[in-house]
Image (cartoon, rainbow, N blue to C red; front, side, top):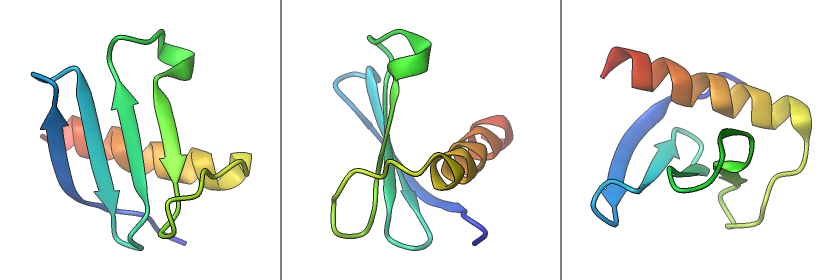
Amino acid sequence: MLYRVIKCEYRDNGNRCVYYLNDRSLVQESRLVPVPFSLRFYDARQCMIYSDAIRQQMKQAVMLYKKQH
């Protein structure tokens, strides 16, 4: 599936970012945590995603969004 970021919210004075994707899933980024642990991935039911393949695709969508904005 091709993931796209449709909305981004900055919380806690920019320390946390929530990226909403086109399939109603989301990625939470915490800038206070070291880089390998800074992203958390959730599906549309708000359950954590553990599949590395899906997480990699979601991460690519977030990185593309960050590069464009």
